[in-house]
Length: 424
Image (cartoon, rainbow, N blue to C red):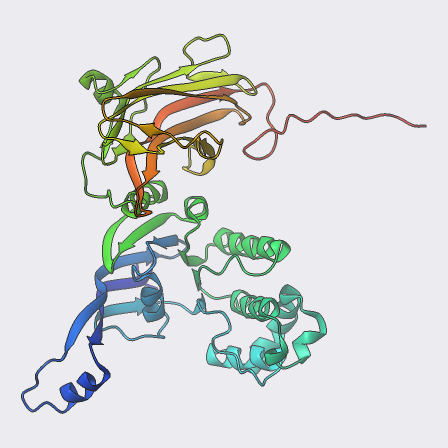
């Protein structure tokens, strides 16, 4: 282990694939006396640099095709990079393509020993782990049958059980925590949390952004093979959402609520948050945002189970068909708790013309536990080509304080009534 506890170090990592227009061009290039190129270079990864510390859960997020799986395969030795260096200080177990190393003719137990051997374990070491692997997979007597007879569910259960129960120093997970039924998924997440509590190093790739925020200490965003940024999970998830709607480099990003109010671009009857993410095409724009309690009073603090009305005005700068107005809530860690929009509520299907202003209100009962919650607003739509467009979006624009005399477990209170009666 290095002195600074760096367990994975990646420097200037690049992976290039040669793309040929025709299969015969590959032969032409191979036998060309003039070394003429018949291919174009496709950069699956370009100049990637990062370190992962011992005990850190490091997330990697990006759109499909951004290079996430290619990066993991290079780290695990499945692929070779075109250039750059990867240094690993520890034994890796990777949940990439589950069961990729299985022999279809072997039984489940035989495949456990085969894969253990591939990972560098002795037979005696695998003997000690076998019962735990079998118990975790929970596929019964099928463990003694050839895996070619397994259902897809049994196959991934055994593969997951094997990968996660060999006690690695580094665990690499690529979209593998959602295998099997609900009970098996719960078991997978418990095992994952156990790894994190024990200070194991984890690289976590998933499209489940709530899990990214919940588990990851730092996150890297990839896009089309390029490293965009590394930072705190909540900030990187917000950046990724902007990339999804092609807004990552358009307009001002973070600004304070005071700046918005002072500029006169927006009005509000409550204070706005310190750090607001504001972006969109601005074909439609929010101009006013107000919060009211049940009495119609301005309220950025509300009692649990009280009524809250979020009222806002949107000015349309162009004609927009079927605009979608949305409200959502996050906790202080950035986990999205709930949200809705007029399409979900069956109030879509109208045309907003240029120059018109609409006033929209969401009246809701707040069931959250006591604490601080961030409200986000959006005006979006889908154009004639089926492309999703963000006209204007405010992330974390208002910090709502919920107060309560009684809290229960979890994010929500189900407002339970308990009856206890002595019968004898």
